[in-house]
Image (tube, rainbow, N blue to C red; front, side):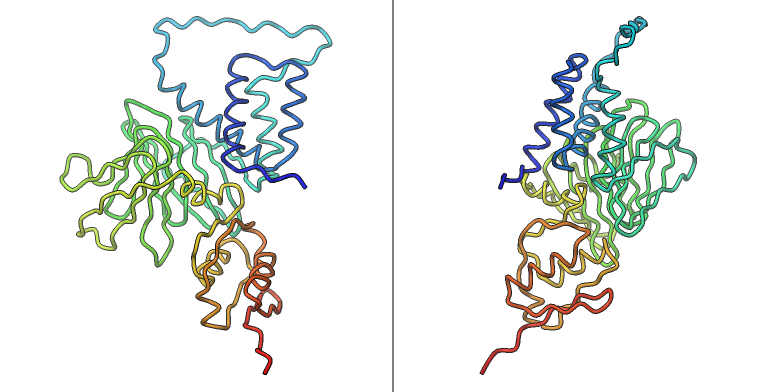
Length: 332
């Protein structure tokens, strides 16, 4: 059996393909190789879209030609299909690949107070009119308010991953309760779940947290994480450095996965409840406290429960939309 590729390896391969597409159209042989690669693991198409977004972010930071010249494209040879280009490939990838990865691609023209919401188990990628992108996790909602002086987004609830394209005239602001988050460029995740502290993770670039020009603000560089205190009166804690593996686990939901590393079983069950109507019920307090580690499909709580039952020698019963886990009765 072939060993499954790691998400890091897939991302690196996707970045290499984007770089090759930037150098010019692919040959017929290269096109076939890329198509075969994309047709394999469903995570690869999502990785191509993320690599393209990061490449576009880098390109937009470069100084433009002060006197750009329009060059008309050469027509394709008669009766010959045009070679695959980066734009054509991304359109094709978005159509087939995002469906395979359970992501819906939605291009919107931002209007005042435009709202975007995802349902149970839905993950959606949104491209804003400035080229910035947002990936919304399940049961999330945000409101977009773009203006002439500021690009403003309010995360109402849920979880979102932002990739910000630089704009020297307009900062990108994510409104959080009493703690506006400002980014000039970069990629970061904000998680706002009821009953839990707002959690911010910076993947690339950097961002500032707090009102501009006031004391008490905090700058978060890449590969850091911070949880907001419950009261806006409380000082902000220092960002904590995190590893790339930690970031990959925290962002696994973009590929339809849930990653655990030592969380309690009842916490894992609550996380699965965000993605599915099937509920995992644990009717043993000792079993509920068992640690869980691994990468699981977010849409398969039943498969996860079967794995847990095998590992912890538990009894599994399914009653309608409930999967019930209990300890097996010990034999006398």
